[in-house]
Image 1: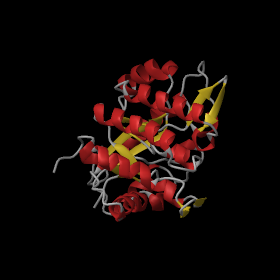
Image 2: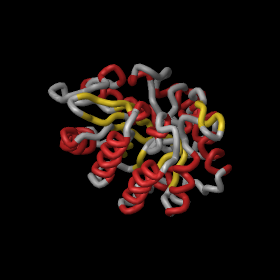
Image 3: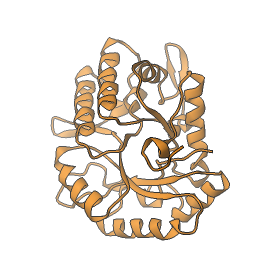
Image 4: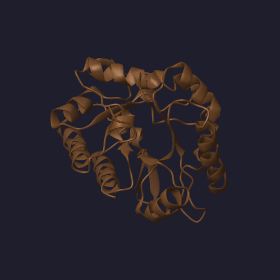
Length: 266
């Protein structure tokens, strides 16, 4: 039995299924708690490099309402959240609208992009060390904001960064240290295990999760959780179980997400 707090629906425009579809599958899979985390809306006057994957502000009210209504029909607890990018320009909106007005249960920090020289660069496409350092600084700033409950796929950049050399180890070590200092769990992401594998010096590997990152997180004593990042109802719990198995194979003990976030107790 396991929980999952990284779940998308059709509202993110690249996933399938509605809220009830995921809840029904979670029920079949003996889920102990489920959190929804579609990509958050952003105010229209803000810069948005990814408008095609997020709901509108108007849709966000209905999203929360439907989660609260459907939750009444299930024996396990259901939580409403969002997955958010980071920029200082979003900070007040996240606090004032997402947390205070919509009263979501949690925000997941899901870093995908960095801003550099007036454009956005996707994390798996980083080509130089400067971008990796910008990514690291941005992640640290986000984790220190106090807005987020956990960090989703913190090793996403390793999908394009081919080797675990000193620069990568130093940057990701700083990210792990910051997560520990701010009591933020780090997520092993099941969705990355469904993507095509890539070639490395050691042979084929997952784009993410990335072994060396998680071994370093284990060594440093980070709190590690497993989530699905489900984009299809059938993966709502299966993805979290795959992520948990990945961690187990590295000798890593997973803390259940619902318990790590304080929503369930032993």
